[in-house]
Length: 347
Image 1: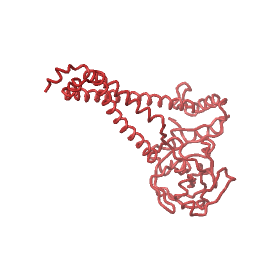
Image 2 (image 1 turned 90 degrees about the vertical axis):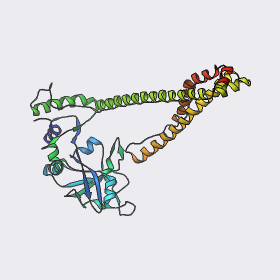
Image 3 (image 1 turned 60 degrees about the horizontal axis):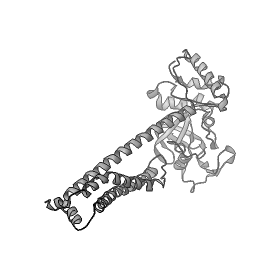
Image 4 (image 1 turned 135 degrees about the vertical axis):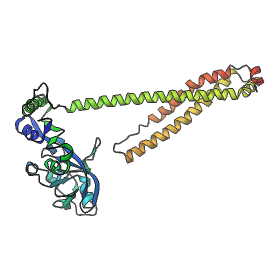
């Protein structure tokens, strides 16, 4: 029995102690028809333990039951936003409040008992989830939950095969019981899959290990961005230096004339340093405008929230000025060291 199966979920729930719930999820994307039609909606096949494992409660009606899964009942629980989109704007339809079910505020009461079509299969709406919003990259309010067995039967059998599941989520009662729960799960699944516990055909991960992996990935990505930024600054600085060297060459007679009229070497150096810093600050301004505009557009159009740190704007200008001074110093010094007589002779 390679990998994890639907029956493993029930086996863990029945035999492992110290847990709050067990669940699994299989996601597919389908068009949904109610009083309106929605395209490419996330359909999540799951089990009765989903609310306990995900700490996500029903606002109205009920969630899926073990009987729904065993009988592959065609019932659906709508995400908060999906309920409103399928059955009307909450401000324009008779929504109702049901604080006794764990939700808060107004929920679309008219959606209960309604029929919807997911692809070509008809489902009865039995519940609406409370408003949760976006967590990570997942918009929980824009999903529909149906029994996992129905997903196997109607949507993903050809793709995944049989009743295989990729992940099983187990919620421990506390952090103190986590090690014991992991040991029990390993022993149970090894026996069910007829494999040695030391060489299982499955892997166990905790939230801490996932967080550590994400933190490691974030740190590596941050370091990569830092190196990219550093290389960009060096390349930009070399460009400024080349421009200033060309400017010194083309303006040799001008420099000689200024020196003949009394300009000191430090005055010439200061002039060209100021020009180099001005160039870099103009580039910094363009970069800041592009960064702020891109951050705003990504926040409005993307799935992840972006936040602009105000201190980063003066820091960007300070970095641009530092690049201008560092890479502009050599051309400015070269200009200051020109012999005024030789400079005036230059054609």
